[in-house]
Amino acid sequence: MFTVKFQEWVRASARRFVAAMHLLGITPNTLTVVGLGITAVGAFLVGVGLLAAGGLVLIIAGLFDLLDGAVARVTGKVYRYGAFLDSTTDRYSEAIAYMALLYYFIYNDPARASRGVEPLLVLMALSGSLLVSYIRARAQSLGFVCDGGLLARPERVVILVTGLIIPVLLVPCLWLLAIFTNLTAVQRVYLVWQESRKTAPVSQ
Image (cartoon, rainbow, N blue to C red; front, top):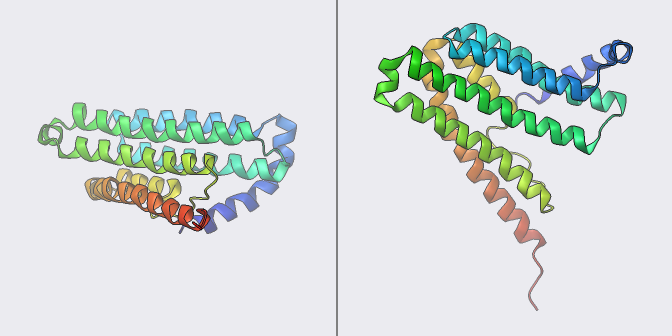
């Protein structure tokens, strides 16, 4: 994934903020919730038609999404509830962003919405994104690894923000998300199937 090195940079940078975090009493869970709040602000801007501004705010929210996990690892506060909260807020963040984009097309760009293509792309991208995350969570609950796939969450955020900041690329980015999130879901189902074959009991 092309965002792995960036995530590593954020985690390394987090070490420089650990002392300040302790002094202010800021926990990884606090960062997670703040990130969701920033996402809501970005989504509001998208909904009212300020796409570029909304995209920039979503970038900041994405940094919080990376930072909470980094701080948790640096401070040794890696708890199951924190991982659960992070995953839940990630799903809400994606849903809020796509709902805002759907609202934008329906109420601020009715000419596009009347064709039905863009709203359908938004719904397909949202469904695919949620499925990608669900498949991994469900697979892991059954003991599978289910890593990999074309579009994990960081890649999806980058593509969506690119379309928001550069409006001429918005529809092409939605096409990418609508197609490749669902392909990623299928890919992960296939990866889990391969894992299951490796661990299946051998018939006598």
